[in-house]
Image: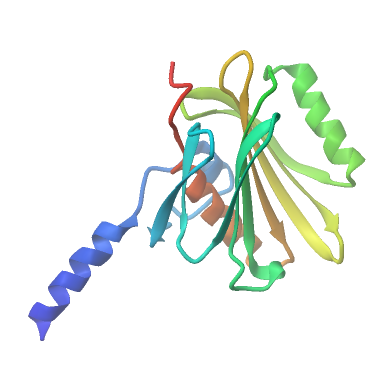
Length: 190
């Protein structure tokens, strides 16, 4: 019987990953042992980047003249228990400077969000910026994490994580940041 368990254990270890933490995970005091299992690689339409997302999540690809994006959510649970991730290469320049940071703060305020945390970080080997804010959207308490990464003089990567409700907010935020750790750029690696 114990010999039958060995192949299953090996398969489990191969299909699950536990990687080094991002600054985000440290800033949000995430457990260092977040294990990601049953992930599926998804590439955006323009082949700019990939996300590794849980197989059970619903994934939509979108592109137009302004962006190429991957939108994903766990639709097997209620919205108040789900995590939504929207990652997009946006066809516009940004510079992480005081004007940009002020714009993000003002946008959060305009949408009735209270900024909880902001900071610069190295993400995908590039200078980046994140903003974590909370507020109310519809009938739900709402947390939103935005990560902005300039890719070149014409494009940037924006990854938005949305968490509705009050159930396991920290755990869902940490799970999302673990998924962000698995984003791969297919271009813009100069």
